[in-house]
Amino acid sequence: MCNSWPRGETMPFITNGSKWGFPPPEDPDDPWRSCFDDLVDWFSGPRVMLTMAVSSLVVFSTGTYYAASRITRSTYYCFKLLESKRSTLALQCMGLVLDAIIVILLWRLLAWSRTAKLRLRTLGTVLTLSSISMSLVWVGSRLFRGSSVLHAGFGFLYGFDIIVDSVAFAALMISATFWVCETSPLTPSAIITFLVGTAKACHNIFNYGDYLHPTRLHEITPLYFIAFGMIIFTYTHGIQSVIFIRRFVLMALLVGLVVGTTVFIAKSDPQTFKRHPVNDFIYRANIRQDRWMQEASTSGSLSIAHKIYKERHEGRDPPPAFPDWYDLAKDTVVIDKFDQIDQDLAPFRAIPPNKLRQRASILSQMPGIHTIGIKDGNASRLPEVTGHDAEVLDGLVVTINKFAKFLPDMLFPVNLGITPRILPSWETANGHSRADLTPIVNLISKRAVKEDDADQVKEAGSAETPVPAPLPTLPDYPQDKEPSM
View (cartoon, one colour):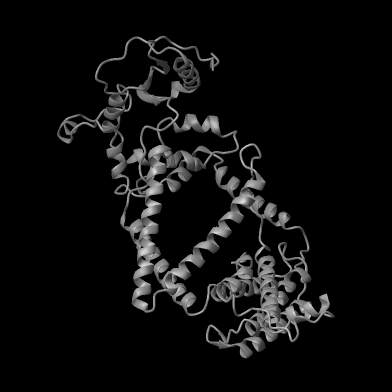
């Protein structure tokens, strides 16, 4: 809208070329005529009205441009080796020219339709052909270039948005085309530019004093340009009313708006702060940190730690060897708050222990899954793993051996891939009850054991891990070995 004035300068010549002709001179063969007489003839009659209309259009379009430019600049960075500032500007100008050409051609095409029915039929044909053309361009780009974007399925919400947007766009096009056919392309574009500029200028004035609007002159000047230019434009271009408002009423409203906003911004004071706003952010962050630290280090004894654990875990008792863990954690900063670990383990708490052990053993046999076993307080891996995976597993085994003496005998699978093997939906991953976590149970493995077979498996003890076949004898890893990463 802000860049509509270039097309507005040429529009009167295209639409009403004969209206702005030269008035016939009284004596064209007078030898004593000078260049000043020619200038007087040029600015006589309709030429004056045309010059004033174009000038007023430039004035309030410039005001709209400066009012709309009072925003936070984009942080988009144009990489000079791939994107040129000149080419980007040239493409924007070309797009503006093409927009003007499309509007004029559509207006001339609809101008031949004498009735509303013919105009609607012509407009429908144009929109249908445009959509078909764009679909062909999209299909061609997908066929020749492909796409790396994962598109979601066509669901109800997506289809509903398309229907609503299509109806709104169709209503806008019908209203705009009827408006253009009744007047000219210049009138709707000028009025829309005026409305947008006025709203944006008033928004800037009422926000005077913040970091984006620090000076009075830069905020009030665009409104002066818009009001003065629109008043001159309505009288010189012959616009009798703007959105059912007569032009003399509009002139009075604009003058009152200019006077009122001038008084308002003159009496307004810039925003001042007793201290820098960043100090408030730091203060609030320190308060949140202190509260978090109090919650994370409340336990002063084993009994208190046991009680806090039950309170924060819905009455569930601490896991085995909790006293040994507390002896190691009591001298650290964080003792009672491990929210991330609780969130990571929450999906697995909906699975019975025997079924979880079964599925862990099944997953260990799947391609790309490695296993680490713990037996008699010593962690080890399968010896046939080689290469980079072996180095990563060795480092993990050394880390586990530092506390493996506190763990029961177990077998757990390890995925060394760069992506997870299970991708639940947002609703599934963010469930908060056991009923909400049921889908995750089914996602643990596609090769889950059938329910009738699973019911026959006896409840295994905490030191048992049912596996299809016993693990081979694994080498012992010393407790003090450093990981070789």
